[in-house]
Length: 158
Image (cartoon, rainbow, N blue to C red; front, top):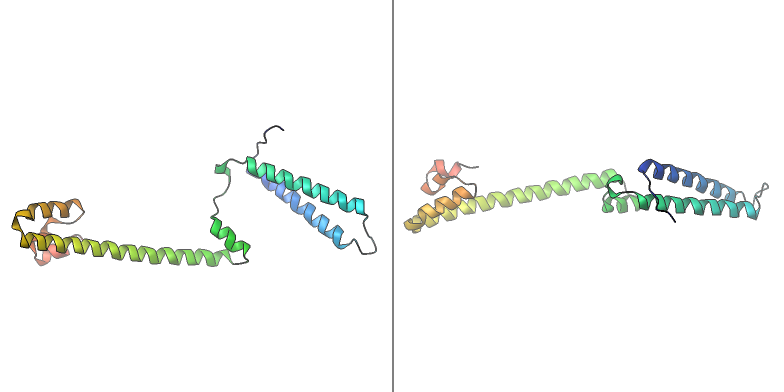
């Protein structure tokens, strides 16, 4: 069989056709016991057409390049498949990211303060390493005056 090349509109049309065939088949099945009663060959024909349509959708979808497929996160798809509202998922995700960002920001400030205190205490206890401690503080984003121990140095860089 020759390789299938497709684009997203072809896949969407094929899915639409499949849904129409599915609805038609379900309608014929529900009317099977009614007065109009389609015959078994009609139902068999509908099921064969539905099977062919599903096969076509599968082939076209698998032939799509990865860049053509919208990037929907798998957890979101599972969330929707379980009958839950995607807006709630989005809100929960945003709240989680906000909490994690707040936690990370707190850790960054704690490490910055620890760096400054450690450098200041090391410079006070061992004057011979004061220049090295100042260089380390400056290279890690801090301000050199933090080693002086005055109020101006304590508040800089925040």
